[in-house]
Length: 185
Image (cartoon, rainbow, N blue to C red; front, side):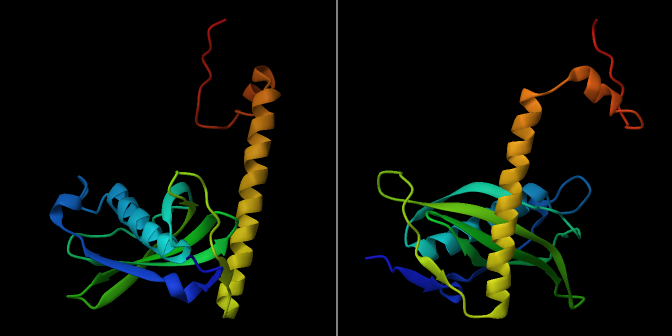
């Protein structure tokens, strides 16, 4: 039987992995895709612990790489459920890279993964309510709620733009941009 509520601390999960040469790009730093793959793993582990169910990634919000990650770094990804809707959960992930030889740890990014709990028939299933026990947990819940509202509004605006798109009007807004509109007549 799945719990009806769980504290955010219940499912807090950390994955630490050594960055090896096969993870590097041509510039010598770790591929962003490798980091995203590990973030997806920790988001799954965190969300499935909270929900007690299989979970899938439905959205990734705000992936901004602030610092490069280098071969030999120990990368730790700390995940915590920040928000619970009905079947969806927003998992916040803080990524840090540690150079153990130099004793330097740097925050490389923070990302938000929206995960959905699924039942045995692959249908969305209700996730336990989130018990908020600290000021930071309340703040993170409120921020996630605002981010979701902002993203919904953004998608609605973009859908309206497609319906009301006026090519000649939009071309006038391209002045000063780094593009050239060369359209057939």
